Length: 145
Length: 396
Image 1 (cartoon, chains in turn cyan, orange):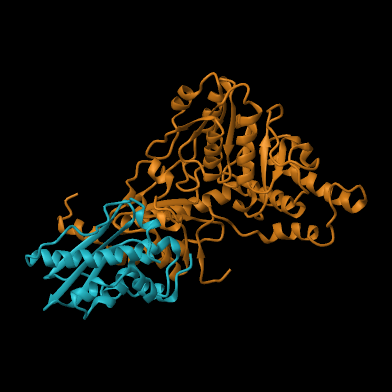
Image 2 (cartoon, rainbow over the protein chains, first blue to last red):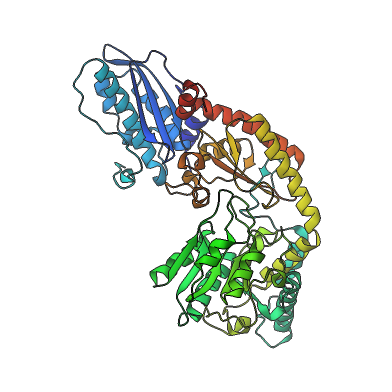
């Protein structure tokens, strides 16, 4: 297994790890059965993500993608944050081993799920967005590499 | 090896003991003859190969003509299973194995299944034991082979091989055991056990990689697997790995001479690790049986955390171990062994295998435990599963 230095750095020194007590949006994706769960907490003011924290159960790549995702979305508007793709997450980490690409998809989904929760709380009409329902293995074949 | 590294993955592989390496050396350089050549250089090599065969046979209580050298434990397993299945295919096409075999065995059976054989995979109980009653009930008139591993590579469970082999023998079915993990840890004697075939691999008992052996009891029919020259009594072609088999024999001889001492050393370390982890870390379970396990094997599941993260953090502290987590295998499913003993996926993902060897010390154990306390704590702080558990008020 070859992780980049960036992945190892974010794994050993995760940024923004923890929870936000009075979060405006919380999203959890993944499934313990598959070995990955990401929980994303967002503090949002005037549609801008002013703080983001995460908790993750998973491998080194899962922790690193969560960590970098919080860095990528902090300070962005929710519209901008929704445009942070798994590809951007992978690039920011200087790449991921092919078997670990699904972790980047999970990070993208965690951000989307937290924003969806925020919008629901604020009365927006939210269509059911993507959420990992378990090990469909879709992410193995469907990756935006 | 780097002094700052604590290697506790001896079930994966071991180093070659210096005295074993010394015995191998001449056969790489000066004594390089082909054992099949008739001149003196060839005869030297022939002598070395046959001496090695005799030594291994002596350790096992077998006859030298019953020992066949292979390129690995995996090859020995494949040869035993496919060889017996094909040699007896007119008699029957039913084969029996267990759910927790090494992939060298399981995937050989999967292959035979595709070739039209019928395979029964015996379940195991929560500690990893095959129930002899299940075996007796699974044997049919068309059963030709039973293959059950001696000791499990992940959880260390030692099967009641003698009892299982007796059941097969009573019904006239050939019995193979994959003893790759047992050799060097257990006083294996083929006649006492009553097994017909037995696989081993040198690099698990301080011998070299790339060499294994298959014991085939006299009279047991096994089709050839590797075709070519007349080596290994016409049964396994290919120029002998002379240095390799010399090393395997030297390593096995040393292992058999020091079996009791080695066992008590490993057992002391394992007990110390298990006891202190249980005392200092909550929500952890020992996988396998506390007593009937390989002396150097400790397999633990830490709830709420994932194994690869644990391994990476241990590696940062110089501790090199292994896990049954999916993430370390490249698949999404955790270890088939841990699932077979009934662990839920999320607990199987958080497993750690530590396998001690001769150079490990009690200080190593204490260092490992101190780091485990810290790392498990850190990963749990990071885990949403642990957060949920705490918020639900620990009511479990």
